[in-house]
Image 1 (cartoon, rainbow, N blue to C red):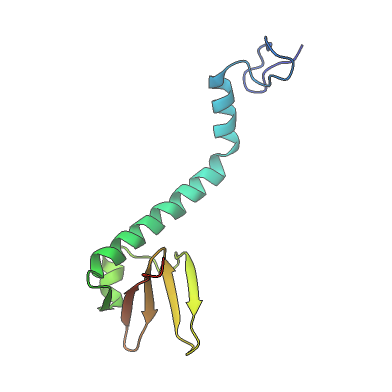
Image 2: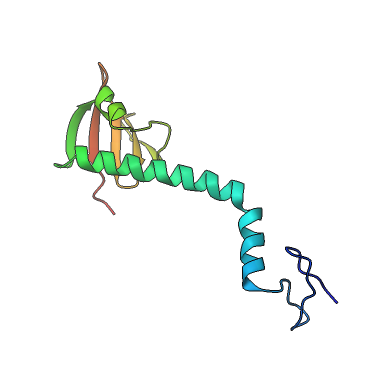
Length: 116
């Protein structure tokens, strides 16, 4: 007879059953995936925050803004979903559909990708 890997109780039911209850199955999987889940949760939180900031600052679809203003709003330049280098060597970083490009003197060009 098998025992539950979470609580050690005997498992009753089908021969291929791995846990004694849904609660034990959930508890086991949450414990196993805790580090990965926290990492992904933190990254997704920052990506959503970056996207919200870019969306709020880029109402017209193309805007110039100072880097310091984005930083003051909590934007993190470490988190983006895609980097695109165009034929003219312009490098844009995107957070989903909202993009930005570093310009001179701490200015940043915000753009919205409408090709989706």
